[in-house]
Image 1 (cartoon, one colour):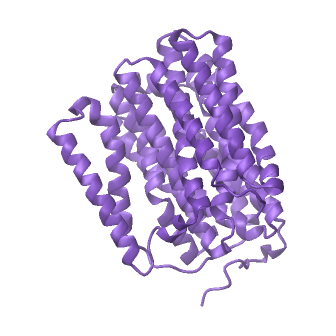
Image 2 (cartoon, one colour; image 1 turned 180 degrees about the vertical axis):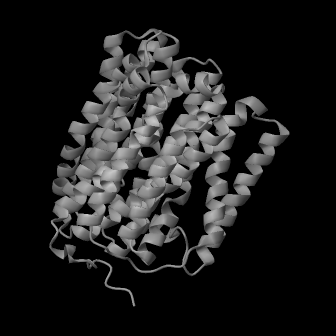
Image 3 (cartoon, rainbow, N blue to C red; image 1 turned 90 degrees about the horizontal axis):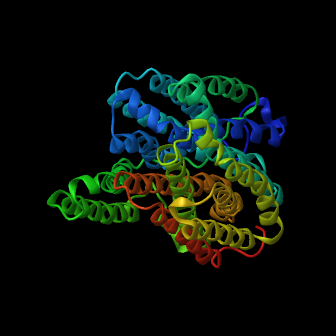
Length: 455
């Protein structure tokens, strides 16, 4: 018989919740890092394994695609078999897959290893959130903890290009994958020592829903990456559009009828939850579009080294890191709407600055724009995450957190595919910056649905 969802199963009942948060955050750091650290290494990877732009897009998106597709199933497995157990399994898979990426002899092997990395990462993000929610019961303290959690996750994604650039220039592109291995080893040891076991309400695994979700997410990403090559109106593209629509309809019908759905569609009846999911998608579209487009353009068009291109994103990383904890405090005091308004405003401002400056923007303008986008990103994560799980019992927090995390990764994958399409088509960067500005406006629109009181 399973224990109470929020009760620890180990002697770690006396473990301080903030220690648990620290360990979970360390593990999340490598998940976020791997989503963006590769972006600045793409030119070197392309030369190393002899692959073009579309192949490089798959190297990045294979990870986010797998991550997005299996996050919710990982949450269900954690509720049934134990969060710490699934968390440790995810760390092990992630570490082994990272090593496989580092030694991959061909692009095909590298892409498969990236898929394995994503599957391992899917066992970390929503499970870590559920562990933190179970460990910290007080709503205000939970909001602060989620702010820290968001800061670490945001920092990992934002600092990826800078760290990746240094590693590529000093040790070669394979080092961007090796870097995760020692962190995983340390995280495994600490998880064993300080993270208590907990479970949620056990649910059956929705195999059909999971398969349809993979088809939907994979189909959308595949069309975005390959559409320019095969032609947006070609018979193959039209068949893909039809297949995606059929899969979406099938997914909704299946989820509405099965006793234990993969994705509880009833959650979307709550306007704040819907706003959080939509906000998560557009925020990460903006972030990944900015990071991939800027680091590629700085290396190819301006001839900068990988480390110099990555250094340009430092204002984004610093701003996101400083603003995320402040956002968590604001959520705890005044609710999610105010920090989301800040997020949308600054994202829009950063995008508008870049659109106005155009392809020949000065270094100073780029740094200012990246700082504005970083502020927006820093303010966004805590209210999105808190809104997704607020008002829910702990055993449903994993499901809600899984959906929100899925939305983040879908947004990241779409941003990567969109930026890759602009690069492959040699389009003006202004188009990409316009996407960032529009994303900021959409965050402003969703903010009105967010709660105005702490919960």
